[in-house]
Amino acid sequence: MLKSNRTTLILFLGPAIGAIVLFFFIPVLMALLISFTDFDIYGLADFSNVRFTGFKNYMLLISDPVFWQAIKNTFYFVVVAGPLSVIVALYAALLLNNKLVRFKAIFRLTYFIPVITTLVAVAIVWRFIYHPRFGILNYILDFLGISAIDWLGDPFWAMPAIIIMSVWKTFGYNMIIFIAGLQNIPVQLYEAAAIEGAGRWQIFRNITLPMLAPTTLFVSLITMIGMFQIFAEPYVMTNGGPLNQTLSIVLYMYENGFRWWNMGYSAAIAFILFVFLLIFTIIQFKIQKPENV
Image 1: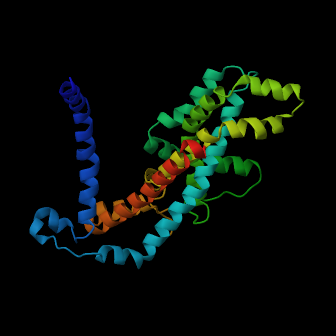
Image 2: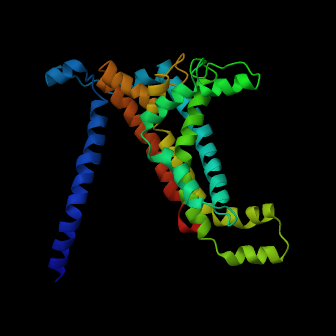
Image 3: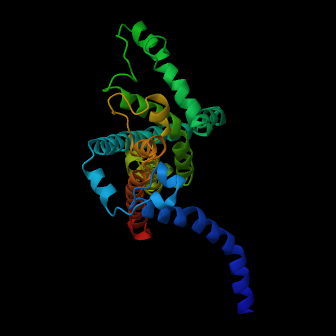
């Protein structure tokens, strides 16, 4: 009987484990090995041209100012866009969870549509919105008597412009999770607070926020991990410019690997990004232990 259970277990788990090994562990291992070589376009033609270089790619990264600029841009995007997306999502969830709001299903669908829309299509549409001469955003500014802004061509405004678009694109997903969390809060807590004469802010601070703590933690960490992988937004909208002010780690990795065919250097960047994401994942599991939530 025990042997039969083991066989059944292997039959059910085998394909899933095999897929994880094939599409995750092996690529990660290969990326790590390639990062210690000078693998380039000549290596694609003949593997005998690939040479082991040790930590040379990592040493070059340390002295590469463009790499540090990409890290700075990525962290800037994560630190600003991540919390902003969570705050907007929570605010939208609170509004849609209000019993006085009508047509909730329509609003939820409207806010969620950007999430399921192709990111490239969204980025192209926002390029037209940000157009310095014909964009609707500058048209509104001109109507208000404010000078037009070159949103994607100005080094100061390029990253904020991408952040605004990214928050609009992603907050709908977080909003749905927050709505689920709000609906799991016992109604009796709000009724007791109302009887005691608590105001809206007191109820939000002392009941809603504490009860949403696990949901907020999950949404925050998942959002920030996703923000670390920003690629399509700067690739489509600015191509990393102007003056590398929107160049992200993933975009820099792509340029080295598929534009300049410097695969070893690109793999080193990919593995550093993998380490960043691994650290954030470990933090998530540590913080979300039952005794810490």
